[in-house]
Amino acid sequence: MDVTFYTLGCKVNQYETQAMIAQFKNAGFTVVEPGQPAQVLVVNSCTVTATGDKKSRNRLARFRRENPHGLVVLTGCYPQAFPDKAAGSGADIITGTANKGQIVELVLDELARRGVGAGSSALPVLPTDEPVHSTIAITPYTGHDRFEPMQVKRFEGKTRAFVKVQDGCDRFCSYCIIPVARGRVRSKALADITSELAALAQNGYREVVLVGINLPCYGKDTGRRLVDALEAACAVDGIERVRLGSLEPELLTDEDLRRMAAQPKFCPQFHLSLQSGCDNTLRRMNRHYTAAEYADIVRRIRAQFPGAAITTDVIVGFPGETEEDFLTTLAFVQKIAFSRVHVFTYSRREGTRAAAMPDQIPKKVKEERGARLTAAVGTLHRQFCAQQVGSTQSVLLERQVEPDTFEGYTKNYTQVLVTGSGLAAGQIREVLITGISGDYCTGQAR
Image (cartoon, rainbow, N blue to C red; front, side):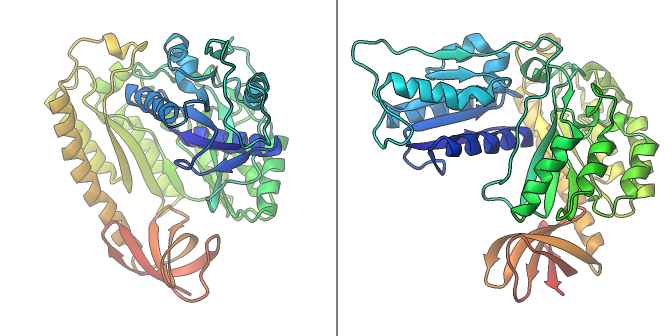
């Protein structure tokens, strides 16, 4: 029987989908690409914004129209945060973020109820004398939950692998529903990290990205620190590059940076979530640093890692943000000279404090501010690319775009179009950066 997956959201969701793919394959299912005909659909949802919820519901409805007797599974952050709404989604099986390990068993049970098995190519048809119903298996978080064991040996269609090492968040930013959707901080054991990376290395992966919901909180529950996980990952034979996912800036200490700098495999790209460069807005967001403290963290990173890429996220149009506040953020972003910025317009999220704040910003104003900031950060990105010209960088080749030309990334996550002979996806090649073309660098493989 064919199963397909539709994944929304962050790198943690992408990792968890890969874990589910492996589980379904082990149970005898055939995994097909999104959009191809399948008897089972698994939607791994994101609920950071209401738009994510809508996309999940739309995909469920589309699959139901195209496969009236198909089996639909909804999992992830949306049902965990909003179980009552998810219950009305029309999915046959609904689980949250704490129950992904049960999904295959729940699907097999439902297929058996319909009289078919995983090896069947028939559509699973409901008995005509039974009403359609949803199986709901959402486990509430207690605050004392354990890290759900997952192992990924392959990351389908990718030359780098994400490895989830941390889950949960207890920061409670005023705009964010994720602590409800993911529970409190919990961490993967170091031995489990190294065994997973060893399996990935055996399957040809040379670069891994350690990811989490609030990654710098790794080890808060076990007496460890994120740098311990980084050092363990760098010690795995066959893994040549280790990268970190999104980081809360105030949680990086000088000792952390010193230990990171001692690891030759560490990729000097720091995605430090900013959200705003205005202290007034940061306070309303319940962020735990000031703009000056953020700038000092960036200074200390650049002192340890010359040429490091500093990337970030910024939300514009947060409740109460004045034009002066926005201009303060714009000036701060330009001052820091980020290599890349993801710009988001504020999305009102039910269940958060910010949703009830006064002075909500009109959509048109949010979009206009987003466009202005996007234009400014595009200039910063091209300036960063220009700084790489003339240097020789190691580049992980990811995708062929033309004969003898591949797209890839340097250790500091500069995107490069590489030309040369004998190129192949998954190789790490030394490349002379020769110029820039649009948002890319160009280079010649040595």
